[in-house]
Length: 228
Ligand code: DC
Image (tube, rainbow, N blue to C red; front, side):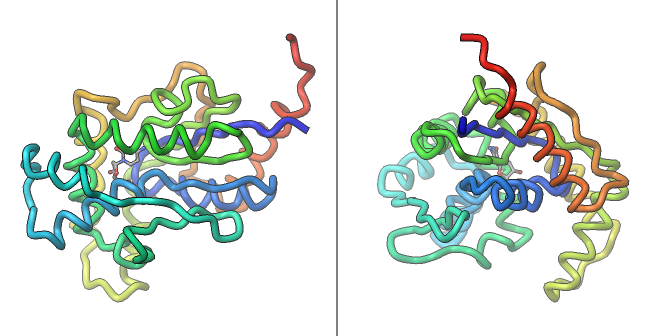
C-alpha cells in the first residue's frame, strides 16, 4: 500500500497536532510536530538568556544546537542532546518566542532540512505552518486548518487553565491573534494555504470528527488509481 505524506498547516489552536496525532495512529503513520522543533530552539534560547531575535547570537547558537527527534510509538519526540523536551515546550512564552524566531532565515533552513530528511520516505503526518507550501510542496495530501478566533481562544484558554496557568480569555485571544498575524506576515515562508490544500474548518467539529475527515481524504488518496 502507498505510504503518503500528509501535510497539515493552519492557525494557532485549530487542533493541528491533535488531529495529526490521531490520523497517524489510525493509518499507522509517524506523526511529526514541526512546531515542537521551533519551540525547542525558542526554549533553548530563553534558557541561554537570549530573549530577542538577535540574529547574530541565534546564528551562533544554531551551529551547536543539537536537536534530534526520536521515535516513541508513532510520535517523534524532540531531544536536545540527551534531554527529552516535552512539558518545557508547552509554556506560552516559549510558543510566543518560537513564532518570533521562526521568521529568521537561518532558523528555517535548519528546521526545514531536518523535516525533509525525516519525512522523505512517506508514511508521515507532519503539522506546522509551511509543510504543504515549503517543506513538502509535493505532499499527496495537504490540509489547511482554520476556525473562528473565538472558538480557538476558548479552547486554548481551557487547556491552559487545566494545566494550571492563571490566564484570562482576553489575554489568550490577544496572544493567538498576535501569533497568527506574525506567522502570516513574516517574509520567509509565511503561513499560507497551498492552492491544492483542502480546508478543514474546525469551529464546530469535535476532535474525532476532524480525524475522521482527514483519514477519509487520506484513504481516498491512498486508494486512488495511480496515473503513472
Ligand atoms: O505549531 P506551534 O504552535 O507549536 O508552533 C509554534 C510556532 O513555531 C508558530 O507560531 C510558528 C512557528 N512554526 C513555523 O514557523 N513553522 C512551522 N512549520 C511550525 C511552527
